[in-house]
Image (cartoon, rainbow, N blue to C red; front, side, top):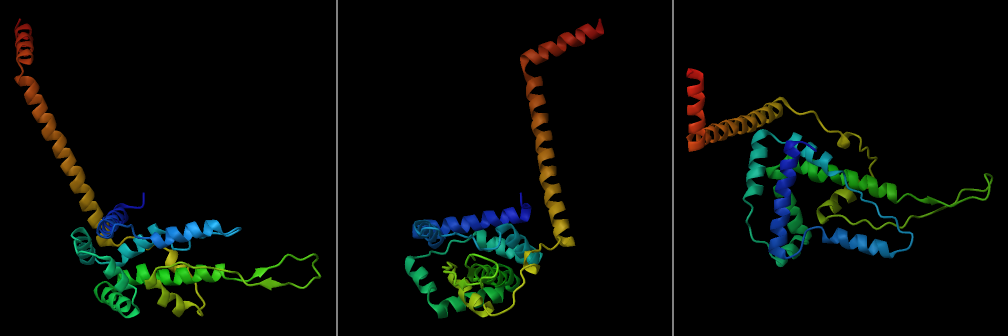
Length: 237
């Protein structure tokens, strides 16, 4: 539905999620599920999913990477086998280590960090600021002065986004640019064409080979040979 490259990236990330679940005995994203449960207990509480849509993030991330970066990232995700313990997860909550991990990601895949982390910092900040706007109280008449009360908002985000949200909070944000999906590059179009041509070529060759063997098998059967012999005799008569 969202394109071949986006679909492959999603499959690889699901593999990573499965690896983490297998290692820790719990699925990633538990904090968000817990937040939803708690929000449902609060009367009149509105629950918002405030992150940027996944297809937009994936498409922008894929468009930002070069062909070799895509291969390198896919290779790393395919053969991810490093053991993860609950102690490792606790260590990641330390600010210094988290910043070090983010710096490593920036160094290896700067464009990926920009689309997956920095742009989403801006989007999350924008959505939180929209939710945190003061609420206007209903007025009995138009002449009555406007009164506002502060909104009570609880934002649940990944730890890696907190520094970016703090940095962007007092900025004038525009999310239109980070919501657009860039058109595919020439190399991306060629790559997709080659993949499709290879897949359809292999399918066509497979069908040809299967059909050829099927015909040979049918012709080798005694009943088929007898029928063909009779047909030959009828034609000769």
